[in-house]
Amino acid sequence: SQQGEEDPQALSIQEGENATMNCSYKTSINNLQWYRQNSGRGLVHLILIRSNEREKHSGRLRVTLDTSKKSSSLLITASRAADTASYFCATVVDSNYQLIWGAGTKLIIKP
Amino acid sequence: EPEVTQTPSHQVTQMGQEVILRCVPISNHLYFYWYRQILGQKVEFLVSFYNNEISEKSEIFDDQFSVERPDGSNFTLKIRSTKLEDSAMYFCASGLALYNEQFFGPGTRLTVL
Image 1 (cartoon, helix red, strand yellow):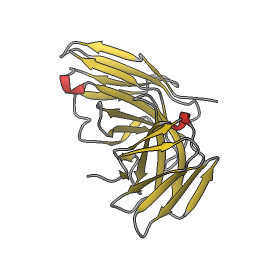
Image 2: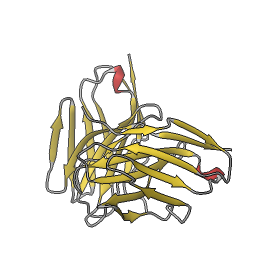
Image 3: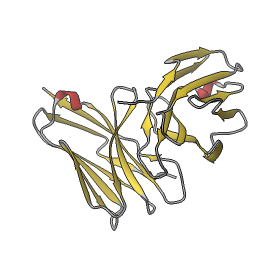
Image 4: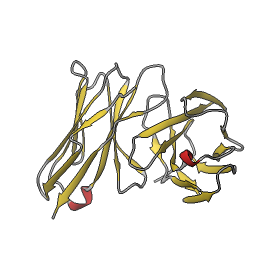
């Protein structure tokens, strides 16, 4: 079943602007994680937010979680060319081990 | 900073051949995972491994697949008889505890001809 779905599928912005990506999911979760992937390479862990948390920050990243709407957002502030990548949300449900992945948002930062 | 490593980075094999993909998880981690990503598609879970046994597996992980932790550092995925549709990027991941972050290796690109 599809758990995480990102929106938009693709986003192109100017360097220096903020980028916001959204993720929706269907079932109750234990936590939600955001990952970055550059051009089909490895998956880099960005941030984990638990179901009892509403917001987390890490550097230029801000993640929010709304469990009532079953949605999360990832905000990247002051974007840089190096932020160009695909961004994925992945969820873990209680009593399971696996990450269930969305299809990702492809972010392009124009210099 | 400790990281997950995987070898080889690219493996080409003939259909029907056996392949073994190797991973060295982060040393103090206890939970180990394999995922795969077919080109242009979502990342898919294959299997998780904890306390020397499979803790969860997906429908993809059928009898052709097996995992092993032969020593204290390596974690391997074996595909017994590869099919064309097994062509994908295979990622190993490890985590310190259940419901914690999963850290991924750089992946092995498997091409089945």
